[in-house]
Length: 234
Image (cartoon, rainbow, N blue to C red; front, side, top):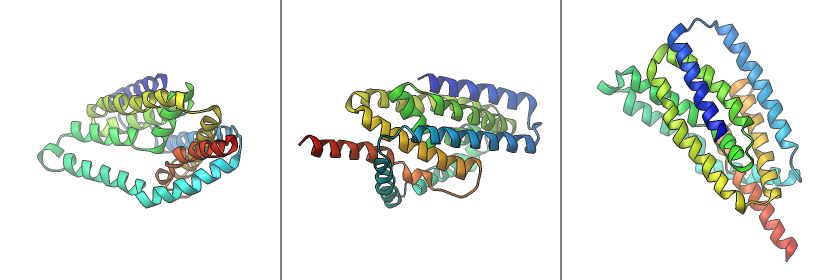
């Protein structure tokens, strides 16, 4: 849970700074810092991928998981959920409240995304919260920018972070006994690939990648390891 608590702290600090100083940070500074975070995120992703014991498991997981993700339209469903929530709370009389809009926008931004899932699983399984630390820095800058325009409601998104992200971490921790070291290694490798995809798509904005539709690969890769081990032992 250290990664989740760190994330909460950076959102609070960023939000308070945003409320206090507004949007005084020049756009060129923000874009340069974001690019630096993108390069760092890609480097971390590559380091995680090199933990694989057999790259074929990661490849199989990405291929099968990508097909499942496209079939289930995970990315579209997440986007649709965000659109429905924004319409529900950002429209009408209630939507006139910047508090509600700030809370909703920040909650979606900080909790709906592959990095949240990847980081929470990594933290729960291995205690390594480095991915959530990266996410925390990004969310801190995001909180600063949002709070400067949408107000104090942004800070209350920490409640959603605690429940959702913390819940994923606890679930992953509970599943640790069911996973072998090889399964964890391949799940970590796939997570590294998805992290590179996030850096290329969202942070560096080189090429759009539907990373959300690749999330099933996190389950498929360790499942492949388990299936192969069954045949090998049989």
